Image (cartoon, rainbow, N blue to C red; front, side, top):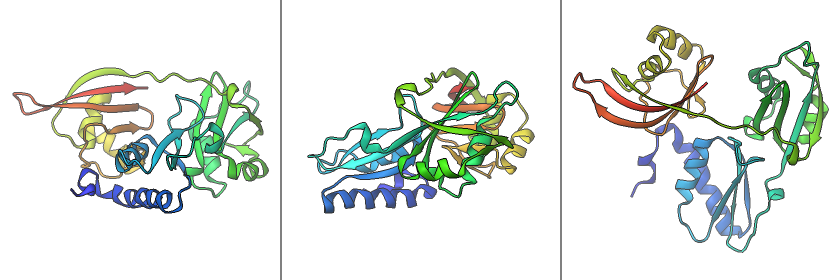
Length: 257
């Protein structure tokens, strides 16, 4: 059976990487720690590793509710602990009474350090408190170089994971119908806006599918996809239930603001 037939073409390179990790563990009989992976990448790793008795798999991102997690592939003899995932939790100090910082500003400042997105986990925000999770191997570099976010001076402090900001993910299920499974058609129906508005967001790089920016309005959505549009929120393609009598697609979605 061809492994690649179950995945989109743009995912094939990542599958090759996972296969290399798998072979590394088998050949060296030692653990392999990945960078932070988004949920879709985590799913791909699970599918590629499968039920291989020679390679075990665990994920951890700082807490059960975190979205981005590091993966650990390891031989059967190895018993992983949380310390093996090499995570550091940072708290961001800033004048919250006078300034509001947004997720995109924090991420933009982290990316300006010249490090890969894979070195950073979730950015956590609640009631003015800000935290982010980083790979421990770059923690000292971040401490040394990150002093500003969105033009605001900030301070960083390492925190134990017992003090992580606890977030609860809430999805509201709904049923929609769309003229096609095109990305612009699905998002327009789900968010109640025109396709032209969605197309503009797509053209400006403000729409993602499975945590990756997509610049094609005709992208075909599938069951299990997670779609997001800047300023509108996020939705899961829970199920595609076929067509109505009027030849429209009936879709079950989970929506998150």
